[in-house]
Amino acid sequence: KCHVSHLLLVIIDEMFEKDKLTELIEQCKCGESKAQHSIFNLKKDEFFAICKRYASSSSEAEDMLIEGFTKIFNNINSYSNGNFNIWARRIIINNCINAYHKEKKRQENEIVVEEFQETIEIESEEQFSYDDLLYCLKQLNDNQRIIFNLYAIDEYKPKEIAEILNTNDDTIRTIIHRSKVKLKKLLTELDLRRKTR
Image (cartoon, rainbow, N blue to C red; front, side, top):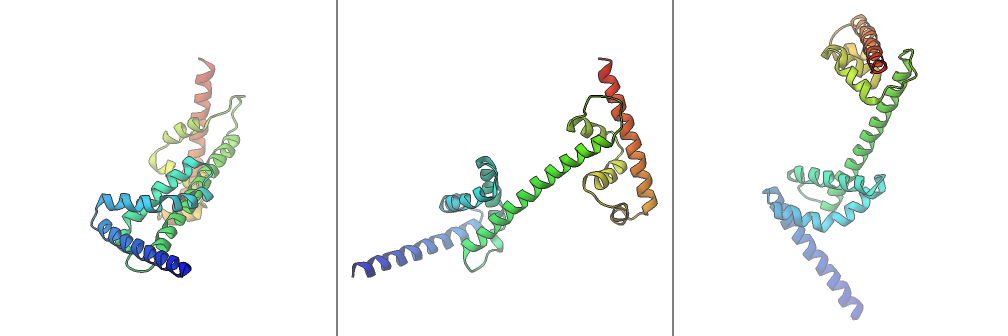
C-alpha cells in the first residue's frame, strides 16, 4: 500500500508539473517575461549540465546556457505538442555544437593567419601580431578584403569565389595577387615604422 501511494504521488506530481509547464509555455508565447523566468528556473540546472559537457570552462557553459535559452524563447511559438523537454534539449545541444564549431573556426583562422604571416617574406626578426595583420587587412579595399578573406582565411578556391561573386576565375586570381602584394607592402611599412621609433 505504501509503495502504491508513493507511486500515485509521483504520478500526480509529474502531471501537476506538466500542466504547470504547459501553462508557462502558453504565457511565454504571449511574451510574458515572468513565465520565461519560471521556465528558466525549472530547467536551468538540467540544461547547464548539458552545456558543461560541451564547454571547455564554466563561463563558456554559462554563455551556452543563456544563448540556448534565448533561442528557446525566440522559437517558442514553433513549439506545438509533444515533449517540451526533448524539443528544448535539442535546441540547447544544437547551440552547444554551433558554439563549438564557431570556436574551432576561430582557432583555425588564427592558425591560418599565423601560417600566412610566415609566407610574408620580410627581412625582420620581429613577428607580426594578429592585430597587425587585421589592421593591414582593413587597409585593403572592400573587394580585395572580401576576396582575400574568402581565399586565405576561409579557404575558398578561386573558382568558388568567382561563383559566389558572379565573376571569372582570372579576375579573382588577379585580385588575390594584388592583395598579397599590397599586404606585403603594408607589413613592410609597419615594420620600418617600428624600427625608426
